[in-house]
Structures are given as structure tokens and as C-alpha cells.
Image (cartoon, rainbow, N blue to C red; front, side, top):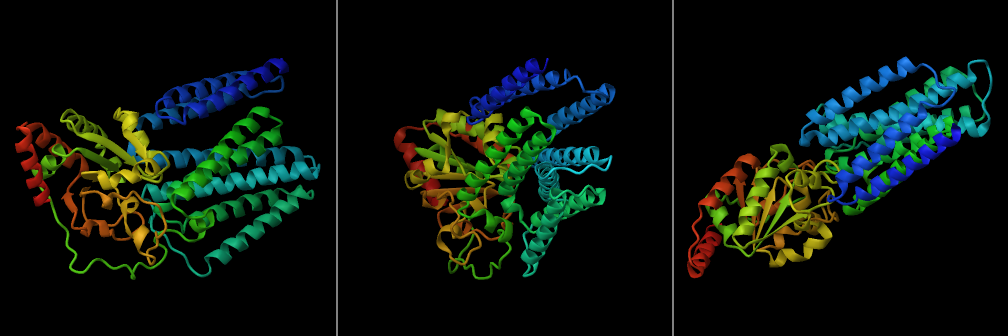
Length: 479
């Protein structure tokens, strides 16, 4: 029977690897989810055949409760709340790993026995890392859900406080490693680890949440892998290693996309420094554009690039945006979507939104692939994106986001920005792009604005080429 379980676990491990491979592309992402889910079901069924497994009624009750809560929340969650859901689910994974390690410690030491050094170290690290991930993910959820302020802050004593808590945690880990069987020690370790997770993530601002979420994800994977070693379960080791490795790689990619080391994310968050030194061009003013003029300007262009941001997710305007791009394509306009790696509130947020609206993957371009095309682009339509289009990151050494790669939308001939107000983005800083003479603002809810643009584009006549060119020049002049 153990051989059969081992084979089932091996097949499940292969499905996890294949699922991750398929998830690398929006075209095959749905298949990847299904393959990985099938592998998990196989692993779950195989686990029930362990000869020492007991408490079947309690296990079934837990599975039913978890399935109902998980499937129900996944179906009801809005796309704007997807980052929050990822954060809370990730936190639950870390918390579960910490509890399993803790219960195994209690079980092994209940009769006064002491653990060997490797066993103690594995249990202590699993409990500590899982607790840090749990607490940090809860804070990330609260910031994204706006249950607590999303702004970043740093004090001179913050780093010393974090270092002090970390040293205390190391002390608890060392105590368990050298053989302590006291339940008070493991309780103290859990408490200090939770505190470290809280004080580590609380000062970090909302603009850094994509990196924080992927970092917490990697910690959860590591905690699960350690739990696998604690229980002697090969599948947990493989699954945890895959999650930890993918989370680590994603964290590195996100940090690279922001041109900032992980240490700077943890201890030097966007918005934690003063922005008083930022200066706007002399006599800078904001120009507005009407829906009709914006529609004409885009309809008579040769190339339009759409830049989606979190405002698109808030307004749930992805379907209307797809309709607008289809109309422009039918008019002979080349339309592309430009995606910044940290657009939205989690990695891949904009890709998920566009995939939901069935936007062709061939029209979606990453920042590195499209940045060179902005100088030859007639119109850029920015929908609710702020920090990722801020030229201060490229030009103002005094800006908190200086050095972060951005979408160079200001190099285009014309820029139309759909935005509710002039309120700054999550980084909490102003955007000089909005005062650029080439930029025109279309204020209002993104969904309503795009719907109006769709209607205006539909109503636009199809004059002869010479008349179309004249109308395009007129719209550009007004903009």
C-alpha cells in the first residue's frame, strides 16, 4: 500500500510541475489550474490509505468546511479583491504549516522526550516561518482591503526593533534545536514570530504589496516544505519547495521590475520618504478632453496603446475596454496593451483582468517589449494607472520612486488619462505626467468613461481619407 501511495504522490508532484509550467502563459493558465487541481485530488485520496490515519469523521468535516469556504469565497470575490484573497489564502497556508509543526512538537514531547537537533531545528523553523507568513499576509490583506492605512512609514528605531524581535526569535529556535521540550518555549516562539511578521509588514506601503505578497508566498512554501520533513511526507516537501521556489523567483522579478533590492522594500518603502523636493513644470496646468474628442483622436490614429492600472480593476471596466479596442481595430487602428510588472495590487493582476475580458494574448505586451514603441505611438490611453507611468521615476533623483522602471507613455504623441480625480496613487506622490502639454485628462469612473468612449466611437462617421485626416488633426489640436 505504501508503494501505491508513493506512486500517487509522484504522479501528483508531476502534475504540480506541469501545472506551474502551464501557468506561465495566459493561454494555458486555465489548463494549468485544472492539471494541478487534479493532482491535489489524487494526493488527497491517496493520503486516506495511510494505515495509521485515524479521526476520519473529523477530517471529513474539516474538508467539507474548507471546500465550502474556499469555493464560496473564490466565486463571490470581485476581481478588485483578488489580491486580498491571495494574501489571506497564503496566510492560511502559513498558519496551517505553523500549527502542524507545533502540534508535532507537542506530540513528540508530551511524554517528556527530547528531540534530536535536526528534528528540533526543522520543527522550530517550520513554526517560526509559517507564523511570520501568517501575520505578514494578514497585514497585507488589511492594507489592500483598506482596513488599515495603506501608507508607508519608517522611523529611526524601526530597523532596531525588527532586529531585536528577530534576535529573540532566533533564541527560541536555538532553544528548541538544542533539545528544549517546554511547551512554553514553543508558545513563545509562535508569539514572537507573529509579532515579527506584524512589525515587518505594517510599515510597508501599499505600493510595495505585490512584492510583499510574493515574498510571503515564498515563506509559506518554505514552511510547508519544512512541515513535510517534520511529518516525513514527500509530497509536502515537493509542493512546498515548488511554492517556495516560484515565490522566491517572483519576488526577485518584482523587485527587479521596481529596480529595488528586497531589503529596500522591507526597510525603505515607497512613500516613506518626503516628497517635498518634487517640482512640477512652471505654470503647469491640467488639460481636460471631451469624450467625443478623445474618441475621434483615437479612431483616426494609426497606433493606440492602452495602459491598464488598478483603476481599471476598481471600475471593472475590462469588458468595455475590450469592446473599445475591438471598435478601434475594426477602424484600422493597431491596438496594443502595455502591462507593467507591478501594475495593480499583485503580480499578474492586469493580465488576469484582460484574460477575463478575452483580450487576445497577442495584443498584450510586457513593459520591456513595448517601451521602445511609445515614440511611434499616436495615442496612449492610460486607464487608472498612476505610479507605473510617473516620469519622476526616470527624471527626478529626489523622488521616492526614482530608478523604478516605468512605461514611457510620455514619449507618445498624445496621452489620454482616465482617472477619477487628481488623487495620487498608492505611492502617495504626484505624477508630473498629468501636467504634460501632451496629456489630456478625462475625469470620471473608468467604466462610465470607457462606455461613453465606445458610444462615441460607434457614432463616429466614416468619412473619406482626406476628411478623416482633417478630423484627426482637429481632435489633436483640441487635445
